[in-house]
Structure formats: structure tokens, C-alpha cells
Length: 121
Image (cartoon, rainbow, N blue to C red; front, side, top):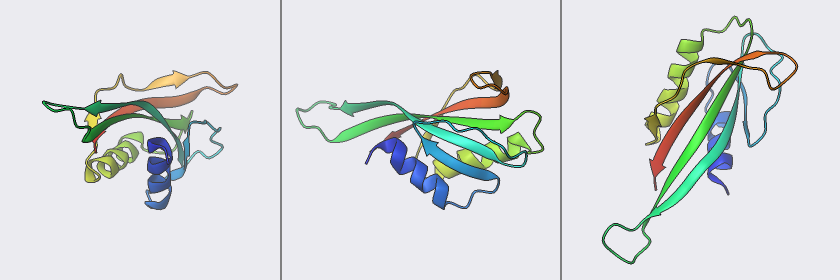
């Protein structure tokens, strides 16, 4: 199972308020003003070999794209805090992001944010 699929399954079963659905590697439109859609992408998987010839650890980095309808009735700050909390409880380290932007890759512009997380396993 890929890291993106594993994270997607965990998100969909976590009972996070206002999460309509999480997807791995694909993006679907969000028809609901009161909920968000998340897409999970794998950014990288790198082995660590500090001081030995043994492969004993893998560092995974993922991108979480959160999409909100524009305009939205959802409080994005509270929702994003619940997503970050979800990942922190599972030993993911949050990396920096560039903030919110308007995603125009579909016919309808949507408010979006890309969050990045890293985990050693």
C-alpha cells in the first residue's frame, strides 16, 4: 500500500468534522459549502543510512491539498487545525507552506492550501 493510500484511509476513518472525503492522487470537485475535500500526494520517500550499510528507516514526505468552495461557510482555520492535529498525533512533522491561494485548475475557482508533512518510519 502506498503512503498516500494509507493516509487517505486513515483520514476517511478518523471522523474529522467537515471533511467531506479524502482522496489519494486524484482531485474531485467539492459541491458542498460546509465541507472540504482533501487530496493526498506522495512527494518523496528516502532511505536513511546514517553510519551503516543497513537500510533501517524511510523518510516519507506527503502533500495534503485542501479545497474549499469559494465562497465557503466553513471556518478554514479551525478545520486546518484539526487536520494538523490528526497528523501530529501520528508522528508526522509539519513542514512550511505558502498559505492559501485560489486554485483555478477547474472551471470553478476554489480556495486551497497545500500542507506538507514528513515522517520517519
